[in-house]
Length: 269
Image (cartoon, rainbow, N blue to C red):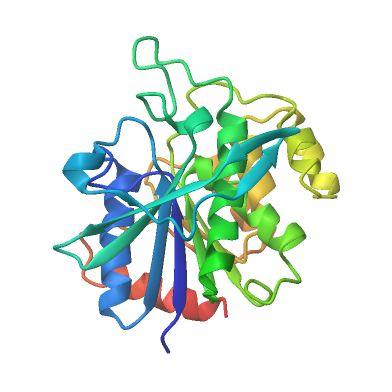
C-alpha cells in the first residue's frame, strides 16, 4: 500500500553538511518515493544555505502569510529546490527574523545555540503545516526528524486535529543523539500555549532539556524510530514505557533498511 508521507526535517543533505540526520533524510525520501509513495519534504531555510548554488526560488502563491509567535508577527516565506539526481523536491520555511543569520542552530564562533531557537522551532512547525494546508495535500504519515521538528506533533494532535487535511494522519518521530546546542527558553511551553494549545504536558517544557523534549514529543507520536546508535538507553527506555510502536536502530548498510521503514509506516496505520 502506498502512503502520502510528509517529511519534516531539521536538516537535509546536500543543503546542509552530512550528518546522521541530514544523510538519512536525503536517502529516505528518495527510497520511499521509489517504492511508490507520494512525498513532500520540508526543512528550514537556514541563512548558511547557498541559494544560488542550490537554485532555491520563492513560491509566491504559498508565501506571504503572517504567523504570530509570542504576540509578534513574522512573515512566512516558502522556497523550493530540487535534488535532480533523486527527482525529489524540497520545500524551505524562511523568515528574515529567524533564518537570515548565516548559521543554522548555533553561533559558529562560540558554538552556543541561538536564544530564540524555541521560537524558530515553533515558527517552523506552524509554517510547514499551514503550507501543507495551502497545498491541499492530505498526508497519511508525518515523519519528524531532529529536535527542531519536535513542536510539530503537538500541533497535529491539538491544533490541527479536526482539520480534514490532518485529521487521520499518523505521526512518526525519529530520535537522534544530536542533543541541544544550548538550553531552550523555559517559556517555550507558554509560547506554544499562546498558539491555542491547551495541554497539561506543556508543563514538561518549563525545563526544555533534550530529554524533556523527547518525553514531550512521545505523547503525540504514533510511532518512534531510533535513528542513531548513540541514542541513550534512558531515552530508549522512555519509548518502551510509552508503549508506542518502535523501530529499533539499524545500520543504513543493512539490505532491508528502507523496506523496514516502509513496513513500519504500514504497521502504525
